[in-house]
Length: 276
Image 1 (cartoon, rainbow, N blue to C red):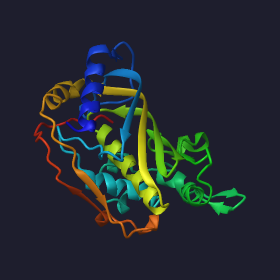
Image 2 (spheres, helix red, strand yellow):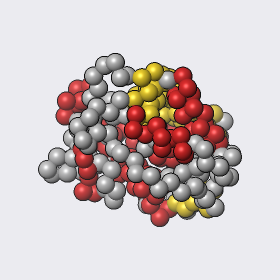
Image 3 (tube, rainbow, N blue to C red):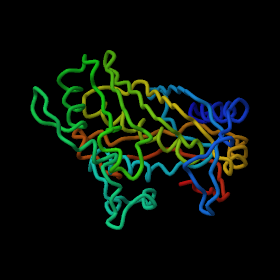
């Protein structure tokens, strides 16, 4: 059983067995038919993945990892908020008539700030610190900018990354305020595990531990049956995630710089409704 499968199954079982419903109060999210999209949730889930042992991708259902990488590069490399520049259509529902999601995600990472080393955006400051000041305990990004929230189509869910070098290993923590377990959990885990490995490679480090901290881990009411079906699937061994070793510049990574070797997964043909 892959570690990602084990953790996902445990998380979902804990939510289903010990979670709290929000059906006693109004909620922002709606289904396409206009009905309220209620959830059952657990507060404060913390998951740890050792990237030196295996890559954390689910096998009990398919994760479209190439699309996840596309979105990651759109946010962290292009620092874009224009859905027209994104291969996948995951953000279309949030975009305005020009294709913008406002001052969210990539936009925030691309804003330059003044540091003693010069003017840099958040991504470039992380890259600089990992190479020049790896002992720092201040290597982090934060895109939850209160001053710009009113101009964001959606408040950031995955909002902060903290990087920490221990010996020759790069560890990282992803902080997430809200997590739709069925549609987004492993998508985000794959993205930020890959990001940690990318940052390690271009900084001359080895991948270490990736930690995922979720404040509100929830399953939507109309997702319950799908989740129960998926976690009954037989897990398979974790595949091997391979990054082109020739890439030493973070901005030279492309979607073709990555491949998944030996990825086997269970099919899931059910239609999954989307809450917005």
